[in-house]
Image (cartoon, rainbow, N blue to C red; front, top):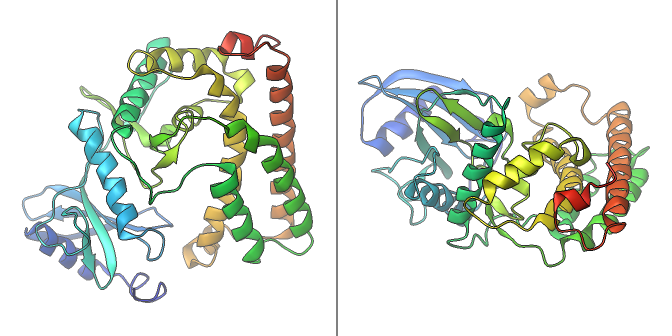
Length: 348
């Protein structure tokens, strides 16, 4: 693959337009508007007849071709089940792997999507939460259809340990804070890892926060951006939708699970994973930022990232989250084999 600082960073509108024009076998206009993305290079483009599309050029080294194929498989499986997603377009000119939805130019993989806009989902009534839970359940039913062994498996002893090691071994943490960061993350991992024993795993969206759920007038909910698709506990695609910590969101959790169980069974005891998954997300986000930290645009947008003050704040946040995890575990452990939210949250 050509080096990460060469072809990828030197993408120009002409190169992007030419690649998409060839892949779609369709004349393009001169429009190539870059969209916000640190990991990938994403452009809004327009065909000669006025149709808007999104060209997504993947950062080299992040995903293998097999991993990208498994992302596209999941989105296409969802589309086949009439789940509202934005599926990649079939390409006429492609030589990347076995999928006709993945193109290649100068060793860079890319995909093209129809442009779909919408507004942020308004979750101000019970029916909206029920509807959202149902969409996630249907997505997981599609996820059950096949494996995704080339994608991340979300587990403390694999994905999170790898994130911690990447931050420490890569020298991203200042010398003043490296030891204490290692100590607090080790304590978090020791606390949460046993909680993932015997947990169900399936293909999940992985980044199912409200920003990736749109409301389209006259059409309803639309799920977008499967870039972080992974194998994980079903709870991963539910907790990110919550407005606060587990103990603050009893009603929202109950509604999500009620909507979810209209289509798919859910193990209520895995609500215990909400706060551990939050801690894992915090660590993952630090590692994610570290991977972009040498990118000029990232440096200009986040000039204080990686400083002593930055790491002190992040470590304090991780300590606070560890307290939340321990308090929640203590509540759960005082119950007799909790299997419902009522039992889990009785003391709150």
